[in-house]
Length: 121
Image 1 (cartoon, one colour):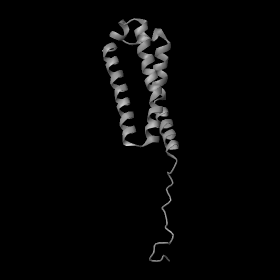
Image 2 (cartoon, rainbow, N blue to C red):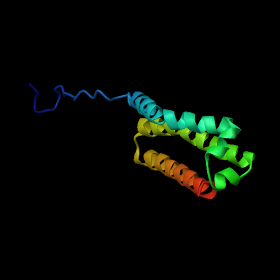
Image 3 (spheres, rainbow, N blue to C red):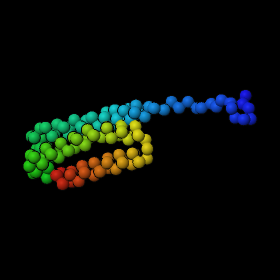
Image 4 (cartoon, rainbow, N blue to C red):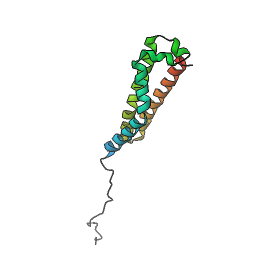
C-alpha cells in the first residue's frame, strides 16, 4: 500500500516496442525490397543491355544509346534507394522524418514520370 506522502512504488506499462524502431525499419525495408525486386531487375537489365532499346516504340527507341541507358540507370538507382528510404522513415517515426522521406519519394516518382513522358510518349 502507498502512504499519503506518495512514497509507494509505481507500476509502469511494459512497452515492447521500446528501442526496436531500427528493427521495424529494417523489416519495412526488406518488405519494400521484396515488392520492387522484379521492377528493379528489369530496370537493371534494360540499363545494361543496349539492344533492349528496340523493345520500346516511340521516343525511347529514337533517343541515343546514352540517353536510354542514363534513363534506366536513374530508374534503377531510384528503385534501389526506395527500401532504404522507407526503412529510415519507419525507424525514425517522427512526423518530420516521415514528411521528408515522403517528399523525397514523391520527387523520385515525379522524376521517373517526367523522364518517362520525355522518352516513352
